[in-house]
Length: 144
Length: 397
Image (cartoon, rainbow over all chains, first blue to last red; front, top):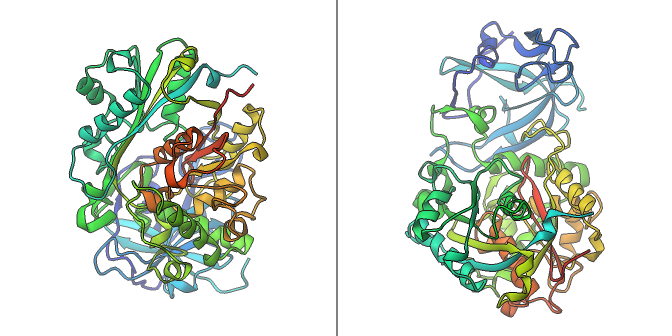
């Protein structure tokens, strides 16, 4: 399913190792996005924490999600924090699985100025720095 | 309701030299403002028995953001202290004032020096903020952990999405938002301490280069070097001071949602809503009683957020409120009358507090509101950071 994506960012900071979050950054190895989920009440928990903040169960497991999201809000970063960097999209996307379950990420593979609230997007991964950065591409279909 | 806020008052205010790339040490700027505030209160350093700052900690590691920690200031002025704190885990920068008021109310101390110092302009140098952000392929943890890996490295990248969502939900425009920067520049022209004084038109604003859509350069505050200090004194001293006292009617310190830039339930107001609600729960006053406001403007959009959170506008109504001139000296709520951080420099919330006191005292010179405001709302923070206080010329029952 994955086609090669050109990373619009010249550089990407590396998340420091965190035993609770490591699964998230490794998850794209099999092209699947995973979110920590409570085995007790089913709540998706992001950022990963312990125990479940809703039922306090400690039965938590990284769980594959669809990767289908809607853009909740976005911006085009224009400022060149890194010399030579072209404008890129930063988006807060909401996962279909649960209201309010959001990731800050990038919508890639399109003109960043075309990214908009309500746009349907789907996860993809950029493998870099030994990390699978989950980013999003336009998924087609009607806006929400 | 008996409130700890009424057990103390602001007896003295002071500021250092403020400017771009002054090249002065943080402790020199800090002692300038602190000694000015102590003198303004009619006290000497020997009277000071409390010390409070934001954010405290290791200033050297913060690229001019931190300012000297309490131990450095205590030693510089050879203070003898009964209470002190320096922390960032507070309801915004004004949390250092709130903590001081609590310490006085608790009987720990009598005259607390509260200060905030920044040397960000010197620290960033000619490269600007890019010089101090997470660099290429560097490891990130803490606050930036979930955002920096996606190139959302600066606060502008965390608040621009709030502005996009706000524009989307309420139909606000850049033309309306631009009124914040234009109005504040007009005030700054009457503030001799403001680094940016050249006239600014809406056309200038619309032509400014984009930083992170929809926010342009003139929506972002101006890094400066400078220090602001206050003396907070026990209420029993209010009649013995050389300058008019400024009273704290109530504080808002609540955090009622997830403390996060992207998980907060309402992406168009975030923590300001809870802190503002808390303020009005504590106060016997109403929004209509407020004569002026000093609202945090690290980014212009935050002024709109605070106007609505504090109940000065309906939800979604702040953009039109600003565009129709209501923030000006003749408007319904004169706001950021010193030029705000957009024009008078990023003193990180303490410039707003200083201006509120100056206006209440009637000492604001060419920009003085007439009559002098009796009640001024001060708010600080943006996104998941928020705190606010209501200052008054007279004790409020």
